[in-house]
Length: 104
Image (cartoon, rainbow, N blue to C red; front, side):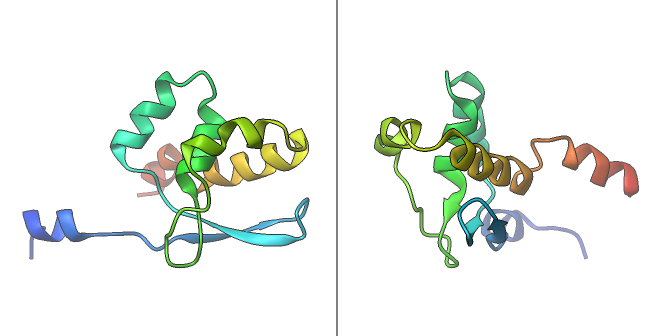
């Protein structure tokens, strides 16, 4: 059975739980949309913007808004970097997509 247009447009990936040792808690990260990815690519702070778009609760509801970027920049660099890394990994922006494709 081949993929239909409706199947593709209705497909969603559940948020992934990410343990953040620096926070002592776990957060969920969702995969960003193509539109959000393009916005990250032209952003002056792509990692923190990816974090804002990705961080969510277990149901996929966003934790942050773009307006939170200034406040996030004032938090611990180690903590923000750990969260941003979780967002990058959830979205396979670290080369993970290439590695997965090579595995077949």
